[in-house]
View 1: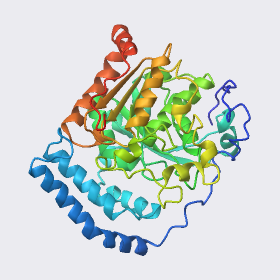
View 2 (view 1 turned 180 degrees about the vertical axis):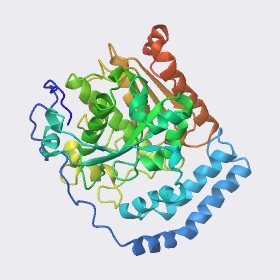
View 3 (view 1 turned 135 degrees about the vertical axis):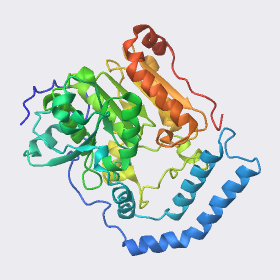
View 4 (view 1 turned 60 degrees about the vertical axis):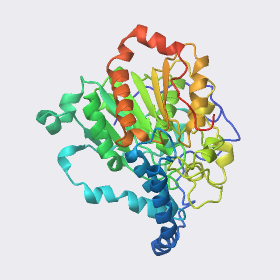
Length: 427
């Protein structure tokens, strides 16, 4: 069992400082939101909306072919991909979380090549954590398994014994998206394989517990477990770890950095946040205005059958927790004293405005180096697709991790540059 020093007390309300607002027992298991309709009902709803979805798809493609694209920079592949995702969104508009989870299991049925990864589940340990994670830690008995896997650069010896080969190397801790309520590391296997090839480093990814069965801060606690597992079980130095996350995983990555900083734990070398979900209030205009371009649904009603933020924070405590800095990092007091951070987002995605606000907040930092890249006309998590700009973005991630953070002059230039954003769809 791991033995690590206890972190210092912080000054964050709802963490080490008591707060009546954040009174829900942390990480409490609950069934809120799990009274799903039957899968038969889901299928009936999908069939009901499918004819209109087909019309939506062909109308989108027809407009593109007659030179009326939704966005001027979209090529035929981008237009086809987004049109297909829009049609699926239309068909699945009333689908329950249970259906989405079943759907996300399809990659496991279609991809069984175990040579692509090394399964490395591990036992969660008591970590003597302070603050908001203290109660989660007290409940840990050392028997809970956290599912995890390695994607390793091509090397037969590494694949046989990653524990022996990885200790002296730089690695990536990858945190998957999925709105905190569905997906796991396997859903991102193709993407983590791609990261391994671009960065030429081992990628360690975990399946953290999902909402609504495990609420905030359960996912953050599992991510902290993974971080210290790399350090104490694999012997990897913190400054040899890069934390990468997309969407909800990007928000978790930022929450991890803030929690480690607030309690004076060692920080990773750098972090890359891809379309990070950093504001669980759904309060920015792009949640409505980007619906026509992005494939994510628009801002959900509080009572909607699919409301990931409500699942994660709890129905009764949602409005009290949705600005907690470890749930919505945008609302942290400051972003000083963090490792260098690269932020990437799309110019057409629903989270565009909150990511812009998030990046702007870094301008007030005295010590944290950051770079924000907004890719023109790109959708949420565009790096996962095969668009031209996806390749450009991953090359930028490669440059950031392998070169920029080791070049003080280059980092100084980034500190002086607030953003590399391009034109907006409603500016």
